[in-house]
Image (cartoon, rainbow, N blue to C red; front, top):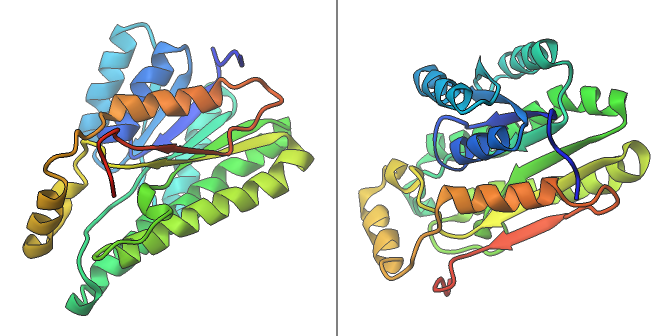
Length: 249
């Protein structure tokens, strides 16, 4: 297994959910963690808790949709800890609704955060990985990045794009630069995403459809990320698909 102690990771969307759980777990494993999000109050609290447990973390106020903001955060992390070894592209939004509702601003928000955010962070972190001829990019997609469902058309489109982009990165970066890539495709996870759905009618419908499902915990997805990062150096865990045992969707 790969020894990841003293490695440096950037985790986007680290203020809650999968991002927060991943940052905690990586810090526990001895990784120096850059905590990136807009809600810095939460990040500072997380940093304090990580440091009290013996870990190292740096708060990075970052708007993943703004390339300059992302670049500044990435450079700040590399300056503080020397480089960037792992990029965990986790930031995402999920304001679901049916297309006929024409919630166009929400469509653009999903494209900007879920897909362009991945592009922005990758573009900023990749030069550091190329320079050291090693690195690992983990992109959080979704079960919706494998299968489309009613009300998820735009969200699924962004997650399909993340999955496709990750596969393209694997083909281009692995053989040439020894950079590994992984796409994680979780099913139902207990995060804030469902609470952010503004279309109340559809929100009630989707939550009702999953009323019998035992949602996974963010910590369980963090464990799948850790599994990919710690794989032997010659192994690239290209895709991980994790769903609750009782989720039939």
